[in-house]
Structure formats: structure tokens, C-alpha cells
Length: 289
Image (cartoon, rainbow, N blue to C red):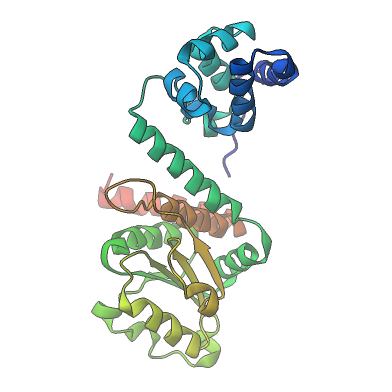
């Protein structure tokens, strides 16, 4: 699949951090306090402005500028440039150019932390089960209710490009007609991927239990408030949603679902690539693009 390489040498930022840590014991009190904060928050430096960095470290903006210049960096502008040169394409987007309003900076930090939480779940037995079910199940059904339904429909379409036998399941519209001809042996080869967020649909728990009673595998992708998924599902992924926005964020949910599509595609890269070529050909014949 795709691979990316850093466009710049990565030594400069590493040298900056090493010098910062070496000099910390020798610095004046306020600068040492700031240096300690920077050392402990390297991963989120790209989100900061001089003002926000000063506020969080409990020092003045003048102190921020003084410390950076002492370390050979041309203020926050120079620090941002070092960050751009250090990080690969995948993380460069976390570096901000201007003064983002503080409430949006806090939201951005919360979103990044939420995404990090999702990616931290991509290890261990639970994720191995997610990978196995997404790759090896004969048929996948994806379902979601209420406000999350559209997201799940999009996920099902994307998953269908990566592998065969993927269906969006609408328990209301189709009344589970898709499951009528399945005996226990056939049902055991299927997997239900159920996505739900607050306010939870009453059907979600019922559908998960029904699927398990019919010997189907179940993966639940939810926000952090779903209390039953671990108990019932074969695998569960949680995506933090409280990021300070008017409504709970679904960015983590989308990331988790995107990772599942990637897993399915990588399980058989030749087949998934052929499916993508065929999809483009069909779309071209229909004049869709």
C-alpha cells in the first residue's frame, strides 16, 4: 500500500531537544520551568502558539522567546520550522501557522488525543480479533442507527471496495431479510460490525445479542460511554468523543472504521487492487466521474 518518507533531514529538532534537556538544570527558574514543560509535551508542540505555551507552562511570552533564542531557535516561528522539517507528511498537519483561538486549540488537542487513543488500540488480542474477523469472515454486515447511520453506510461502501461480500444492514428497512436463509454454519462465517454513539439506539444491544444468538461474530465500534460492548462483542473499539464541540465528535469513529478498511485491503492486496481497478472502470462506463 502507500508509503511515505520524510522530506527533510531529522537531526535538527533532535539536536534542539537534546540541548534543551542538557541545559535545563542550568537555566533560570522560569526558563527551566518552561523547558521542563516542553520536554514533557514534545508530541503536542506543533499545536502551540507562544501565548498558549506561556499560559500552560505558567510563564510569560517573553520567557518563551528568551528560552528559544537561548537555544538557537528564532522564536516560535523557528520552532515551527524545526517541527516541519522533523515530522513526516503524516504528522506535518499538526503544526499550526497562526494563532488559533484557544478554544479550538483545546479541541484540536482533544481530537489528537482521541485519535491517539484509537491507534493505541491497534495492538493486543482485541485488535488481532478485529483484524481476523474483518479479513477472514465470509460476509460482513455493517450497521448503525440514527445520526451515525450515514457514516456507517459510507464505511460499508469503502469496505466493499476492499473485499467481497460486504453489506449495509438496515434492520428497520430490510427487517433482517438478509439473515433468513442462514443456518448456524453459514451464520458462523459472518460478522456484524455495529457502530453506535450517544444517544444509543435501543436496537443496538438487541441486534448484537440476536447476532450472537445466531452464532455470528460481532465487532462494536462506539464512543467511550458504551458499557455493554466488551461483554457481548467478540471485539470492541472505543473512540473518545468529548472534545469540547457542540455535539460529540465522530473523528475517532471514522478513523477506527478507516483502519478496518485498510486491514481488509491488506489481507489480499492483489484482489483489493483489482477490485479498485474494476470499480473505476464501472464508474467510468456509467459516467459517474
